[in-house]
Length: 289
Length: 283
Image (cartoon, rainbow over all chains, first blue to last red; front, side, top):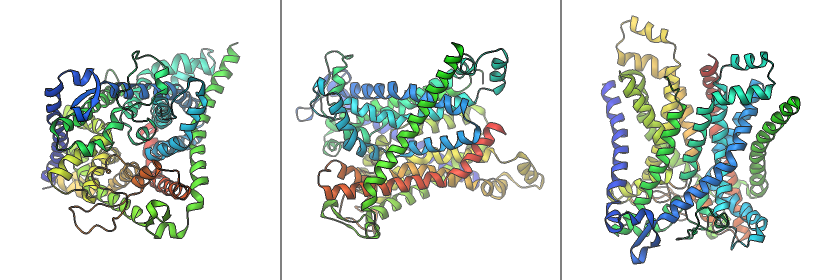
């Protein structure tokens, strides 16, 4: 009886996840038939004309996540080095608790702060580049950086702590300074865990929805000619998630191709975040285990 | 030179940690300072009026609590089943690993994907329309990995001699589960649920197409077409239209209440969690 119940409920969970994946593949078929590879590779989203190409949104997602990582990873690694290598145990736990509180702050509250503070700071701070508004890819990226910082800190701290203290003692015994033993002995050994912290933070950044929606400007079809142009970061854009959570999702249902285009975005997002998450999880496993 | 680098490294690391904590401090300070004035008894007991510019958030709070309770009740049996699967029923190392990897993968699924899944299956196919139950079930999917992993860790921490003693007394595996494993690990279920709910409480994306509307809902009496109000969606809508100063003060007040709710849930989960964490690392 107990065994049967365990199996039933577990299979229910597995079946639900299977159904989710199946639905996202199956319901996006119409748009793949309609657009072919152009759905992935073209810059066009005019739903009244039934033209769907998601490239600007993939670009938007990649750019805001990249900005977030560039800002959050160095700070996060530094903070993790401080908590794991310099703080005594009790203080370290206290700091970790505070950092995890920061991780728990809802996206909608970050979005609110983004709208009422960060938006103006970005607009004023980059005035000489003449942004059209404070709702830019950069604004979303900075906001995301704050949101993923706790993820980086917590995971990196765990990775550094998992290196045995004997390694540190031996390094100090050989005459290395504390900084040298950290940077040349501890950090290189923790590199897989540190890498995992980046990948898992990337997965979180790409999937974050509410906060990005509120500050990214949500402008369709904004793709710079040069993907690496920094000026484009000060334009409004659209990410996969900001499109998915917009009112277009309500409108699209019932129109097979438009709905397929929306669900297809979800599928692309699933693939991107899934790759980052699974790779990150694989990283944390010890190579010989 | 080496001494200088030594000190510089410590200083840079310290500055990074300080920045992270300052962000938390600044965030809390701004929310409390702007939201504090809106908090009064009436803010909790009245319903919204004038599109959020007046009144309180009573039904928003009730709606969020209904969603959280539903998510808890729906995720708990599944989490228990999955955790028992991993600890007791599954034999092979490979199948266990697939299960845990699957949980991490689910944990990485963006919540908007669950929201759209719920919109297709529950709102459209089942014909529920916006319903508190749809939202609760979708939030249950969002928190399932958190609850399950916490429960698995707690099961793992049960000393082997308890199980051996029970087996020595001739208890079957099912009896061991009910008499030893579950009573010893319910704390893990509670901790995991609190952590999961702390995340679920602030989510907008899973519920905005499935469960919640901005105004005009009170206590749901059925499943079909029975939306609820909710705190995060309230903030989400007001934040997009935040020029009216009256709305502004209520908006920050709602944000403060939501932040308080989320922090209380995660802090309630803390004591047991720290203990497990430290045992895992030093035990």
